[in-house]
Amino acid sequence: MTIAPAELRARLAADYQPVRPLRSPWARTLWIVPLAVVALFAASIAFNVRQDAPDLGWLGVWGLSIAQSVMGVLVVGAALRESIPGRDWSRGAIALWLAIPIVTVVGVTLASWEASPVFLGAGWWLVGGICFAGSAATALPVVAFASILAARAYPTRPAVAGALLGMGAGLMADAGWRIFCHFSEPAHVLSAHLAAVVMATMIGALVAVRLCGLRPSSVRRGGL
Amino acid sequence: MAEDHRLRELMREYQSGRFEAFDEIYASIAPAVRRYLLSQARDAAKADDLVQETFLQMHRARHTYDPTFPLMPWTMAIARHVWLMDRRTLSRRPWAPDDVTAMDLPVKAEAASFADRVEVRRALGKVAPARRNAVIQHHVLGFSFKEIAERAGIAETAAKLRSSRGMQQLRTLLKGQDK
Image 1 (tube, each protein chain N blue to C red):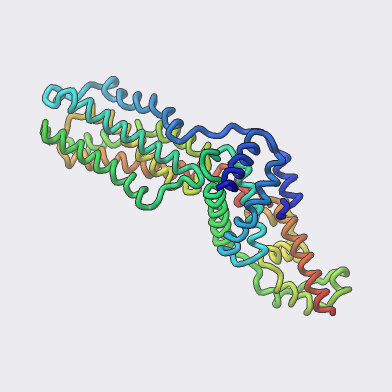
Image 2: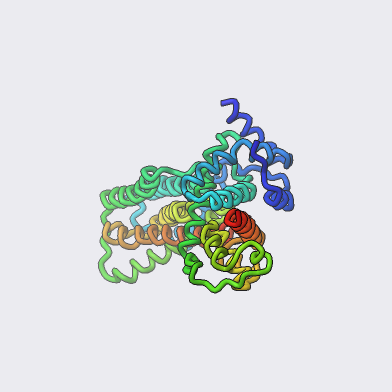
């Protein structure tokens, strides 16, 4: 019979205490929902609902944004599942989790453009910059909170988990921002709004890697 | 199937406060974990170190285990992570005294009783790299265990353990040469 080394046993015994198992990743995803709701309403409350709302209708404005936001919450859920050892996604699944949101944003963009084509004429860079910065900034609190949730688990691939939660946060933030921004021109939406989602994805990956670097690890900090 | 169920139950008990369950978990899964780590590291001493680090990480991450899922995939994911982190740490560490034959080794009285400097060098070359590094850094270069631990990115206890195991291996090798 294999016996645990005395030093290892003593070390574990030193800080041993009962723990409560983490809830399932999808249950913990529910913690994100209030932030998703805030992100959904923030821009429209702070500024206004897009001017072409009557042309788009309730489904075109709120319906598509809610769908995008729900997609964002699901992607954060995928990130939280990725953070559990042994529950990590396959490469194909990760590619799908990253591709589906992009397809969602493109789909929402084209649907909005089809229903209400609004060109962005003058001030391309200014408006683009505002939409990019606004979306990315709205995503940051969600990225921060989701990163803490992920770090509470044990992500063995923090960059992957972080990228997923960043993308989810970006989707939620953009879902709210598109309720305010009425420029449906695909070139604007894909360059500014989608770029903000990509930026949130990168920030998520960086934050998760950083946070997990702070997690006690015997390999990096202690251990036998 | 029954074994899997028993392991889940043991881990659940370990989570909920029965520390003794650890011994049974260790006895059941340590051989498999060691086999996996040995297949990756191809160095028995290294694999032993990594097994202990894996169990330490399992202890720290025990709250992430969901008893409704099998224990082994969770354990192996942690073992793989430990192996990859160790490999990354090694790749970031530029200094490793592999060429011990060129070093000027002050043979201590303890070693002198077994062999001369040449034999010590030769034996040291056969000690597992991680342990050899710890022995050389502590006994030859005079680093404290704290300094060795910082350089290697491991715990002070781990540095002590590596050094003491390295010395033990060295003694065994020198005794072997003596005969």
